[in-house]
Length: 600
Image (cartoon, rainbow, N blue to C red; front, side, top):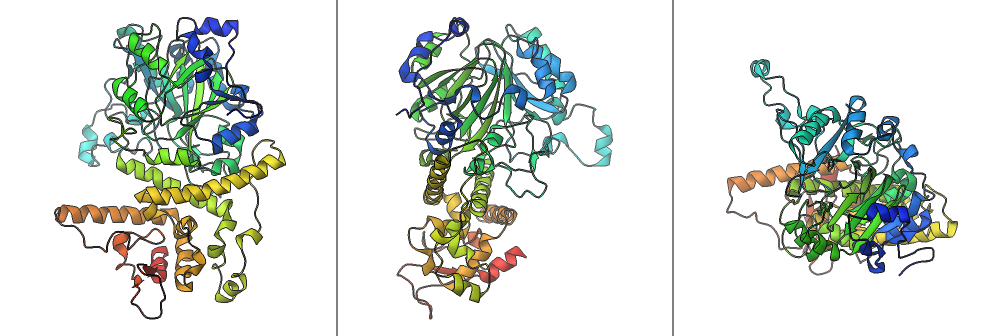
């Protein structure tokens, strides 16, 4: 249902009709059933991005009104100079390569079979990294990837004798910089028919992480949200900056560290695919016009990802392409300056109508539909499963670990008053007795502060809804995902419980307070050590299962591994223990001494 100030149809000017002619059927753009939701104010756009589901709709803020994210504000000078006079991605690459040896990207083209293929550097060692995000075959770094130069394939041996005999071949990092990619693009343009016109630059970013000039030196924000001290972006201003730190933090993840910039000429674009992480993409169409199509979630997207992966919808369109477009749920024309949000967890494809520049930032919002779809990441079977291009489990767990960091940052910086039971235990027993009757409603709470002008009533309403969505997201993560049930801090797990957490004893309260203050690095180290012990035990006795209490009878507290209770000297108190009143079937764990040792 359209809100006030929104339109559901796209009107094309004669110039835009001339651009679309010969590419996609123009009746798809005039069909109101496939039209995007167009909003006119940044407040409405923020509501749509942070609060609504993105699985079925595409939301567009025409011209980026009120966000100050135009090309002159976001793109660096060398990038804007390269756009002048260029009509294709190859011409742009020739102009910027001498000045951008610190930038890396993936260069792709459409081969004779109509499938998008990467133009690789010939003669270099090492393999090109697979994408862990938007496309299963495009080369893109995730925040969990190693920095360039740290890949194990770039150094074969550390022996001095072997190092003296190795050939002087380009390293993996040098192969991916723009000067090396220009050599690969020129070779492909000579050898492949029509490759020069279909060249597409994907995921442009810095080759190495640098200090974020927009972040404080004392920033402790996780790498996946706004405020990260290290970044690879080439943009001077991102959409997360326009939203403001508070709104960008009110998500499970808003990746400002590894955003990507895409550049392509007419009849080039990104082939149809489903992102390896089922997140949302908020985009900024900085220059040119682009066609965007999305498909319904579930089986339609999975089938297209299996049958037409990386197929570019470039003219002339074949029968399979026309049939696929006829089943698209949204077909959108993006104009220069438009800001939009789509779901990366559904099949989607793009096509540039002229020299186009688009920047994307990935995020997972607190909306329950988006959270549940994110939890489907990595599935291989069922209507939402992918037959190929599935993210490895280790990378997915690293990403989920950063989601836990983001939840902790929200709890510490924005919604601290929700955790009154934990906060009142940060001092001695006298302070606990004095603050025991204090309720969350009486604690001071600072509403979220947007990065743009928003009416006070809308700000308060947004803050209230975000707080409710935060609690619901924690409950959903704990109920439907094993990783989050195991590694969520105790105070977040208690927030997701339906019962009142004040019924727990003071001993367990003190241990929860200590474990909630444990750093994310300690939790990650504990998870890695637990994984190593699990692998070693499985290799020693593959057919033997470790003895454990019945399912649901034990859970780690404060991020400690399941099998580390003896090492941390946990005291397990059951229903039969004296001095403890508990409901039948409950298990109480006091890990005060264990948590103290872990922190030390």
